[in-house]
Image 1 (cartoon, each protein chain N blue to C red):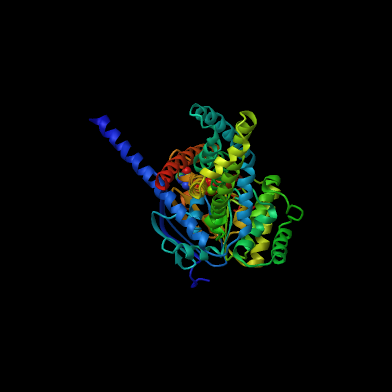
Image 2: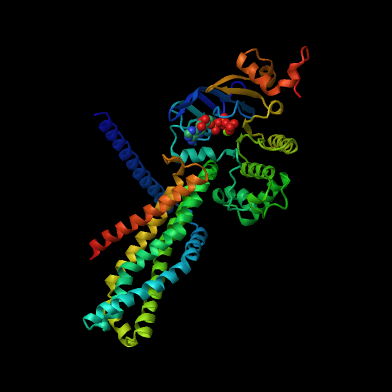
Length: 265
Length: 261
Ligand SMILES: Nc1ncnc2c1ncn2[C@@H]1O[C@H](COP(=O)(O)OP(=O)(O)OP(=O)(O)O)[C@@H](O)[C@H]1O
Ligand SMILES: [Mg+2]
């Protein structure tokens, strides 16, 4: 009986803890949204954060985008050839990229590059009382620190996704047309024929949502570092929190990818 | 001053962290324009008291009245307004490490006022010059010494001409020369701006020279809130023990008059 009770108690405590976490995340976002619509609006911090996220992720996006396109073309070619429809290669590559892989892989890359950096930066500021200092100076930390990052995430993510799609299509061209000798005209024609506005629409919605999710989760994890039950202290606290932000953000992106797809399909 | 309402008043403030009871009923009053020094051994909760006054921590029980407001009851916006009259020098300076010295001091001006670039520049440079920090304005906090960081923190705390300034161990970790420098700047700035000061410090007996009242925090309560001279001559066992512990040598030779420094 005793161990069972203890198990139950632990389960209850964990549930409460995680519910509190979720509630905190919600409060965090509502503060951010409230501060985002409150004047004054400052453009420069947003631009500098777009630069931060964009510059950090640019090359990794180009690199992973190219290879994703290349492998899609390779896989697609051999599958399609079995049905004698290599002519659909362009369509297969483009649709996979625009609807699915572009937003998701780009988001995962941005989590690794920028999300982790955001979490660590805010976590260190929390640890060294810089956030307390902001509050004591009557400067709203949400407005000053977080809002520019969230806006930048929402703006940068679609741009990076677009970049990913473009280099992906070029990567597919490289393998499909240059290497495997599908006609260049057919590669692009099948793309034009099959990719409709709705696909682009879905990709854009996804990337907007992912941009928000990534910065929200990463920033909140850093911001509430001191409230973590495993002890958010020192360098270990920051590194633990950063890891957990990366994992949580990645999982959340994949879950929302499924949800958005199932709603919009 | 006597009749005037205190700037800060703690009434029966209690605070626990988990199972650890840190504050067990703090009563403390800080009158306008005075300097209150809180002393006490490490880990007694001095910083926690300051955080209550700053509205960063809420008491489990009791009241924290600042400038006539109960901090536990005010709205977020009101708290922000109250904090516009604060200046804080944190224990570890808490400078923004990704901003230069200049930008650190300029931040409150930029975020809270509509000052033009030129005005910001003038005000910041005036404060930095006051603190003997000319030439350091382009450096980052990690590139300057601990003593300089404290002075930057002081410049940042004072740049908005606050009514109340909080100092959490302004000289801990500094050598004698540097801490004297901080005290000199404290004197100079308080004479000029007439702010109310709350100082947490270990630096006995030097700190007694600055204080109008001294409060000893031990075991979660304030023991005696009195003038430095009264404090040093107090017969209360806890205060006596503290004074002897921290000022030892002066008092050890028998028959010698109790003097400060
Ligand atoms: N946020 C917190 N969470 C949990 N415990 C805390 C927190 N802040 C302070 N404490 C605890 O409260 C006690 C008092 O801490 P505080 O920092 O106020 O001490 P202090 O008197 O300022 O000491 P020092 O002179 O070393 O700065 C410590 O034992 C500390 O463990
Ligand atoms: Mg302290």
